[in-house]
Structures are given as C-alpha cells and as structure tokens.
Image 1: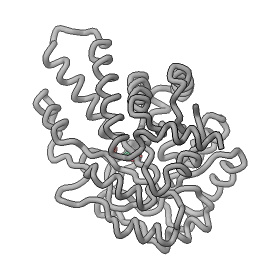
Image 2 (image 1 turned 30 degrees about the vertical axis):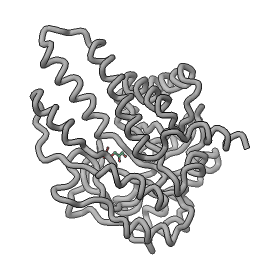
Image 3 (image 1 turned 60 degrees about the horizontal axis):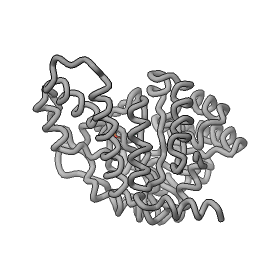
Image 4 (image 1 turned 90 degrees about the vertical axis):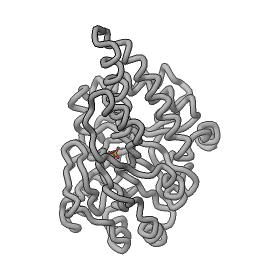
Amino acid sequence: MIVATKQLFAHAYGKYAVGAYNINNLEQIMGLFKGCIDSQAPFIIQLSKGARSYANKQMLEAMIRTAEEIFPEAIFAVHLDHGDEQTCYECIESGFYSSVMIDASHSPFEENVAITKRVVDAAHAKGISVEAELGMLGGVEEHVQVDEKNACLTDPDEALEFVKQSGCDSLACAIGTSHGAYKFSGGQGIHFDRVKAIQDLLPGFPLVMHGSSSVPQDEVERINAAGGELKGAKGVDTAQYLPAAKLGVCKVNIDTDGRLVWTRVHREFFKEQPGNFDFRTPGKIFMAEYAKFIASRNELLGSAGELESLRESLKG
Ligand code: 13P
C-alpha cells in the first residue's frame, strides 16, 4: 500500500528512521519488497532523475505498482530523490509520488527558499509533501557533485528560517555525511551536536539524512578480491543510525551500499563461473542478497517490526 510520506514520519518520529532506498531495476524492487516484508518494516522507495531516465519512469511506476500487488502486506511511500524544479512538477502532476525532494541547496539561501516555496505550493495543492535541502553535502550523487572544500554543515538558525519561509515538510541537513562510497578519510561521522541543535529549534519536524551508506569493509574487500578497485572507501557507522533517529532523523537515504551488493554478487559470480552467461543466475542471487541487506538495515534503523503498529495507526 502506497501511503503519504508524512504518515510514515508521524509514526517514526523520535523512535526510529524509515529506510529510503534508491531503486533502478526489477531485481532491486523484488529484493527491496522481500527484505521489508521479511523484517516487517515500512520503507520509502526513492527514484532519482537518473533512475527515471535509466529504467524509464513509466516502467518504474508499472514495476512498483505490480510489486504492490505481489506484496500486499507492504506499506511504503514513493519519493523523488534530488529533483530539480521541473522534475518535481512532473512528479507532482503524475499522481504516483507520495513526496518529492527539491534540491536547490547549491543556490544562495534566498533563491533556495523561493524555488522550494514554488514547489511546496504546487505539491501541497495535490496533497504531496516536499523535502528540501539546506547546507551542502560533499561527494557524488549522480548529477550532484560537491567538492569536500565546498561542503558545509547546516546552520540551525538558518534551518529554522528556511522551514518557516519555504513551508517544506522535511529537511535534508548536512550533518557530516557525504554521498557515494568515499565518505570519510578518517574517523569522522555524524555531528550529533548539530542534529540536536537543529531539532531544538524545530521540535517535531522531520529531518532527513542523505549519504547514509556504511560502505561495509568486508563488501569492499570481496569486491576487490574479485577484480574490483575500490580504494579507501569508507562510510557511516551504522551504530549511529538509531541515535540520529532519536533526534528527529526520520528518513535515512541508502543508495551506495545497495550498489556494492550488486557489484560483489556479480563480480564474484562471473569470476567463479567465467563460462556462464545466464544473467538470471546471478540475478536471483542478487535479489536474495539485496533482501538480506535491506532487512539488516531496517534492523539497524529500528524500522524492523514496526509494520503492524503502523498499519493499526493508519486505521485510526
Ligand atoms: P549514499 O551514497 O551514502 O548511499 O547516499 C544516498 C543518498 O543520500 C541518496 O539521496
């Protein structure tokens, strides 16, 4: 069942975070739904501009609607990840999306507010909620690339002002994470003092954490042992997910780690079976491994086991 993103946030706020997983193809969709049913967790499917162009937005919608029928137990929201203004309007008009993200974080504050407010007005008229971004995460996320020197943490006073002026429903904050597989060179992590300062000024307001992949070192080692060359990749400590959730982080974005599962499965499979050319065999392994990965992330986010309680709260 597709629900409003704000319904998921209302149930999660201060207790757990909802996993927001980037999806591009059939195998990921099947693995995602299975992993969330296995762990009894609500979830958010995120479609980026790149995914909508890679798999065709109509194909993605048809696959997700079919998955909804195959897994009738599932409760989830559909979200546009890192939208520009035009893509936001397209998704708002489509009637398929629960929420959109307008990413105008590269623009100056006033312009970010103005763009976000236009999207909010259009979205709210259709009952859709809007995630906006303030502050700049480093790293690479498809078309968005920010050098570490230009990355900056979200200022709490600005966050308060931004939410007031733009009317957005949730805010992606720069709190120490970055996009992609190469997040940290040393022991950095989430700046909890910053999250707390933002929450103090915006009590009850859902925060979003981008760049939340953990880049598991055993995964990187297995990929490299099977011919990969991922050097010095480091991610977020998964033990930090739940403490962040308790401070109002309701949505945790995970993309890179899913790509690593795909890369490990396929590299190992074709290394071990160089004469094989049936893509369905590694495809099946990937779906099972991705489902396991999703279930493990839901456990760490605290969303595992929340499905029935959410279902009950939606009836009320
Ligand atoms: P990762 O690159 O850490 O998976 O972050 C994904 C993300 O934030 C998508 O918006």
